[in-house]
Length: 266
Image 1: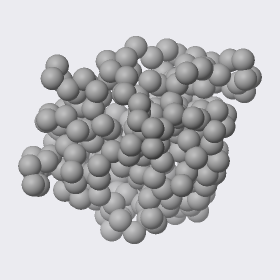
Image 2: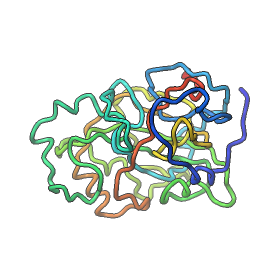
Image 3: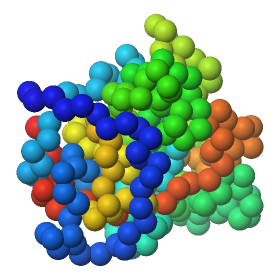
Image 4: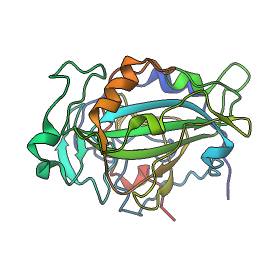
């Protein structure tokens, strides 16, 4: 396998806002590694840049947890297109079949975790780094002056937000100052939602497009099925405060479809 030096993480903070839509070959960003998000059911890709996969999550430090409203990726369990705006992306397939009770907002539109209500889809990203750092706010927490080119991994799970105390509790996947074998770790990662699809990609977020690419190299692990999560547990995560200072759900980067910007999935 050929190995490429990572671009400094500081560059990710200098992204551009670009228009969303069909991208011609002439407009596609040149010289960048494989991009994210993608349709994880499509294994094709022709991007030539190859880098070694990051170590497993339990051998890296958790540095950030954040969410996006709607799934940035498209997968077997989240195929409902939500539009091409900043809060577009994809929704869980079960969205239209939720009950009246599941859709009732216990906070009546004033939940402490802004940007989501019952019935929404969110994609949660657990970001890991090879740097010796503690969890904190934003991607800047994944590096320091002594470690500017980390190996990065993102574990991803798409959730359907519901008003249901029997649904999954976000606290089970949060960070609670847990250190295991010397590495910062969440309480747990989701299971039972299919074998994660692992591929080479980049960072995401609405400031990047197919014309303005992310320079970072990231190993992704995306679970293919949705799971229901209790909205009250997300509100509580924000109410209680968290080391990431997360109190709202972020926008999405639209799906990357140009083969030149995708790595083949093995």
